[in-house]
Length: 410
Image (cartoon, rainbow, N blue to C red):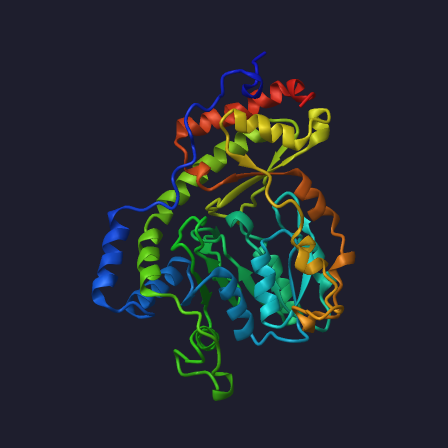
């Protein structure tokens, strides 16, 4: 029997496995200097180059860069003609930005419960949520793991709905060997600081439809169409343009994605093999259709009953003492966010007046709520660890499981 590091034993992981992030080298420095000296700092050639390259990388025809992932989701909603009175179905386990994109377009968010095995929306429940107001389904490929897109596309076809992919975590991930973000009518990606490729912030919308790309361009670029297809009445929008500096950095970052994705794939597979043999820990399930996963966040479930009641927080504390940078993900489903728990029909301030038909305060999605109590997460930076470091991390899981009785007093 080994003594847990939390209680004075030797930690299983000897080196810090979290690499400094963001990652950069002289490539980014040179690209930034080039833009600086060009005196062309606004949305110009570097942005066009990045849009084309990233769209092709994800197997889409058109890309329109913007200032953030949330903005990209709002812009694709607007371009798809979604507005006041419409409903968009999305996952209950996601970042608030997914919802903000829908709400700012004027639509109502309808939350779907999740499949705890995949951390993505439960496709089997989607059809039960469709009403005569539903205009789109926005699947969230959480952590870079693809949703069951074919089933969603079939549902969308049957009900004449749009699929708008929240691919904020999707860089390099594929479904049936085709890039995430290229399957639906349109998609949105994020390049915020923590992401696998980052410009500090930034986003991009992708589509295979030229007319929709024109509508997105209008929404992003103060009503200016890019392909000359948008009716004059739709030529309006805000200023959400990406700068040349951000595009230059992102073009450099994109070149690292294939190699980094392969590293995370190998480390994620090692984790899955180990965790599958540990009673009480259930690693995320990946379907055969998810042909490449970038693992922005790797997930598993902690079943306290199998640990004879040892709380998840005690397990996490012990794992961190062993040197594994593990966290617990979202503490609550996104509909528990304070903005959704307010009475939007009372008081002087009504943030989203058009959604007065939905009262989220009474919403209860049992699988999402239980999942938030069980989730274990390992970030993309930890998944960039060396093979030796990863083996140390897997051994730490085994060690803590075998000596969990030492945690009962924690």
